[in-house]
Length: 326
Image (tube, rainbow, N blue to C red; front, top):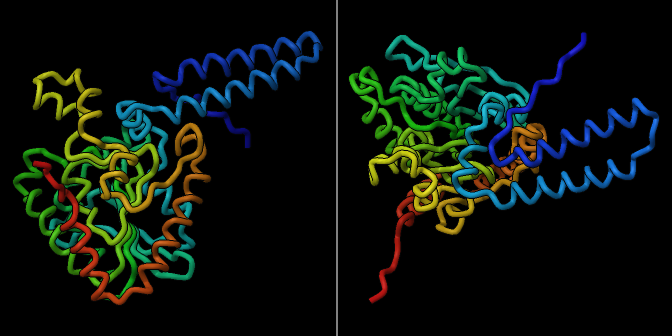
């Protein structure tokens, strides 16, 4: 069956690269029509395009990294789960509300011979899907479903992988009525006591308490162009300066990139992305994630559960410690 190639979704800073690639296609088409050999010129232009792509994606500002983290075609939790697991059975519902929150998915999987629980935020691929999944903003039921799955993993001594990708927890009136703050706070407390190894990965946008609700783990991994922040730059700018147009300035001040968090001692491992971002080569990104998860899992399984719990607690107690010079 014939397939049609999807048109790329360009970010603002990618336009010079797109113009160069379009020029290459035009030259190739003209050469074929006129039976002229321009392979040397095309090779030179393609080399320049590759160099330009490398230059663009190695010098992104925090605001530009947010654009990459929010890219509509960036691999999602379900994309990664299907790519890295041998078997996958999705589980539904929090056993309390009678509903199933589609913004937070989870289930049991086989990963390199291990039975594991995988769960994470899930955004949609188009407008209809995003509405159904509430743009990856989970309700209290979603966080209670996540905790139910993690307790299941703990009972049967299964490792836990969480994938963080949300602008924040759902802040609607119904969410507050159903106890959004309590649901997230409960997860924070309970994840510290679990015996199972927990590896958390920021695969896209890690926003506010919505990210932390599944973010307490023994290891925190993060993709190179992902972001992790206490509040979105737009919200921060609106709060501080009453002007959301200053979001780029807020992004710089918030220290939200993987490099910032690595320097601050919050991030355990930074995962490189393919040139052009994870959406440019999802399979390559998934292979890198799979290798990192396996390496960290094997290291954690070698540590007794009691020691893992102590190390997990100590890890979070050390975050934010600083010395003030006289």
